[in-house]
Image (cartoon, rainbow, N blue to C red):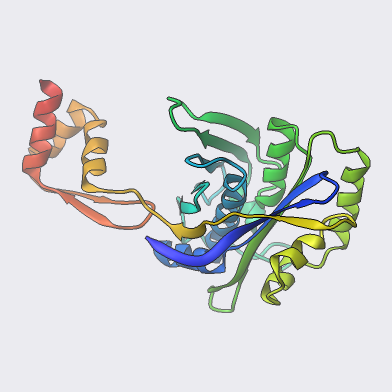
Amino acid sequence: MTHSLEKVHRFYTEDLTVRASYVETTQLCGSVSEIHSSFPIATILLGRLLTGATLLASQLWEGQSLSLRVESNGPIGQLYAESSYEGKVRAYVTHPHLDLPPNSDGHFDLKGAVGGGLLVVNRNVPFQRHPQMGIVPIVCGEISKDLAFYLEQSQQTPSVVSLTVTLDSTGKVIASGGVLLEVIAGAPESIIGELERTTSLAPPLSHMTLDKRTPKEIVSQYTHSTQLKDVDHPYFLSYSCRCSIQRVEHTLSLMGRGTLSEMVLKGEAVQVKCEFCGKQYEVEINQVRQLLNSLEA
């Protein structure tokens, strides 16, 4: 488990019309990039998705978690990020070494990497057998607008989502963070227009994160002219993978008798790599045979 000193900072406006969150994820996204040895495009996309998941999960309750899955039809493949209310996160990307030519503006071609597809949001609640699922089409491919579109379509919540991941010339994460603003039910419609105005005038989030502005200073650039009140969120972020040899064996057993029989016939230990943390597992052939015998029984 990789710990950081980063945490989500939550606020609400004094007039009770907007709730807001800010999180810096520079350490966390840097760790994720190292774990997956990702190239810049994957680092930026996965960092934004992970930051968005962290912000949304901070609005849940104790013991709950949330996952975001980008089912892309572009060359990046699938992007996945998961966060619990307590700040335990994990993430993976199908093609971490994707490299594309710059787009017409000379920037990383994030839209070209994602293409189209679906954004799948799962909210996991204790004691419920199945997660609460929401699915929306990808409208942008740069994550921020896709999450805002999901909140408006699936939860009927007008929102502002701003996510940033800044890299140096070597591809190392030097600044990463996100802002989430949600209009509280019952707020006057004029608030939406005011947030759109202030958001358009706000300095780039990447600049504010690099400048080490305080969370309240950053959020206040997006909200309308009213005081911000703090809401405590005591949990620090940590990259936490739940893999184990027992989970690996359970996954193998789900592959069915035919696949396990082929493994036994090969007579070789099975090598498995965790897609979240990169840890390598080896399942001896005798254990594979036991798994097969259990299925046949």
